[in-house]
Each structure stands twice: as structure tokens, then as C-alpha cells.
Image 1 (spheres, rainbow, N blue to C red):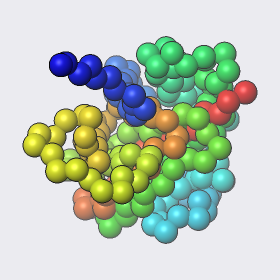
Image 2 (tube, one colour):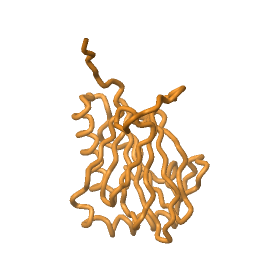
Image 3 (spheres, one colour):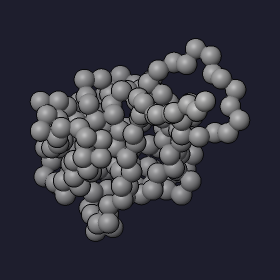
Length: 196
């Protein structure tokens, strides 16, 4: 007797590098620090990295136009790979913010409610920057003993981001950022994409 196997309920996480990152990096970092001196958002997070969530939407800031286009194109690719109807998902970002992590800052596990797809862009990453962790969107009541760790049985995914890269994922996936231990600040941009 032979059993057939299939993989269902996949949680696809996309990663893509921005080949033009070095051209836009310095100007965007300066812009982030200019914004930081003027505005602060309160996301209601337990952890308190600097964020412009609810105070400065980078989707409406002309200085972020090039990076917003790169992010939108990455989301379109993600929709294509996953057979999502990009005519029914806003593939132009409408909600975006920046995060600046100082030494000791982190981000607890969270999801992005009322969104379909979310994105993290890594604008500035000092050496040994913290990883981003994802866990399944469900709770396994009793984990079976495993003989070999594979994509099919992992209960925790860790992504070691690269500067100039983007991570695209479904918004319901719980994710977090480990504590930042560098004296140099880490800057990321975050986006949400909604259904029409």
C-alpha cells in the first residue's frame, strides 16, 4: 500500500533584494531621521521602538516614491506566485510607516489585522542585526516528536534579513523582531496591503 502526500495551508514568505538599494539608502535614512525629529506615532505596542505608525504615512510621502514602487512590485510578484487576484488586492501601498530600533529595542509577536499582505523593508541593518521570527497562525495542541526538521514541521521560522531586502507575507502570520544589541540604529519600513 502506498500513501500519497500533499502540502496544504501553506504560509508563503517571499524575500526579494532591491538592486537599487545603495542608490536610495542615504537619502532615505536622512529622511527617516528628519521625520523622527518631528513626529512620533503610538502603535499601542508593548515594546517601544520609534515608529511613525498612525503619525506619518510614508505611502503619501514623495521622498519614498521609489521604495514604495519597489515594495508594490514585490507584492505583485507575491500575488502572482500565490495565484492571488491582484485586481482584488490593493497592490499600491496605502499604509506604511518607519521603525527605528535603538539598542535594547525589539518587537513582540503581532499580526496586522484588517490587512491581507504585509511587508518589511530593511533600510539600515548594522552588523549582527536581530532576526525576524515567524510562527504558524494556529496553535498546535501537542507537537509530535520529529526526526528531522523540515518546512512541513517547523513551528518557528527565523529570517536573517539583509539590508536592501524585503519580506512579503500574509498579514495574519504572527511575527516578531528580537532585541537589537548594536549601538548603531536599525531602520525598517513596514507596509500593509488591503482588499478592495
